[in-house]
Image 1: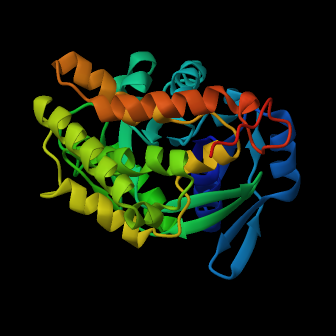
Image 2: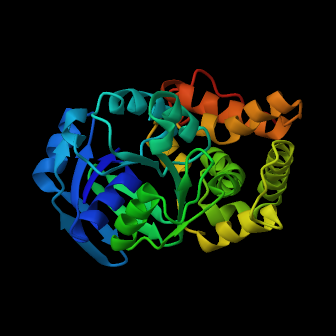
Image 3: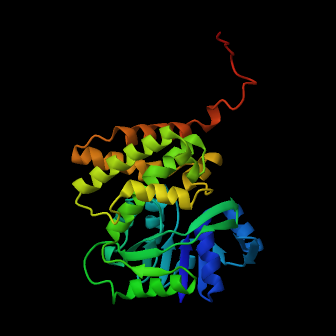
Length: 324
């Protein structure tokens, strides 16, 4: 089985190593020549517990290298999905495209450019933390669910889903087929809505959000707004108590650094527009006020747009005023 993998970030590198070690033929696509050369030369390091392994993974810069793949996994940041779809459009028809990204809207962006019947959707609870170019920590293990990107048809005998499940399961990702993957994607979105922006703004690990009454209160409000939007869209959630689930995830991943906080610490663009920002957009469509999600979205957008102007120490500040 030939697997293409787009995006050598934390999750992409984790998957690449796991798939190669499972004996599958993998080709990783990167758009940065220097990083691609580093990965090709030194391989990818995977840290799990106290152990670190390093695996050679073929890396390419041109989309043509993925021609002939049976399955292509999309693991880029959500804001790059549209560009990836345009690149994959030029490949010969054939491969199934599976998104394992954060946020909502990725399936729709892929389906606007690629054949919708070839687009598959998935979520995973596996955690991955980037430790540097070509080095990643396997930060948590969990279930993976995949389904049809565009509803319609049975999942049990769908060739693309069976192929994807076989590949991911071989790599050690316990994978289940989901008839209504949209519900799972939105349920995971609610967890990200409650955690990611708050960790990015406070610089706390996931569990730290439960240590302060203010962050707990804000968490409750953003999650409730998201629940109302999902209900208005007619999307059933898999949690009876979404806020309790968000708090549970905070506890279980207490020391984890969220992907959005990782982006902020590295002064990179975040996925805020596809997480809390998605709640804002959908709320506007439904005529539902979502003021707390709107506030957090604006604050994170300001944070990522002002990296070069932020005050980091008092030294060099224009003035220091002392009030008595």
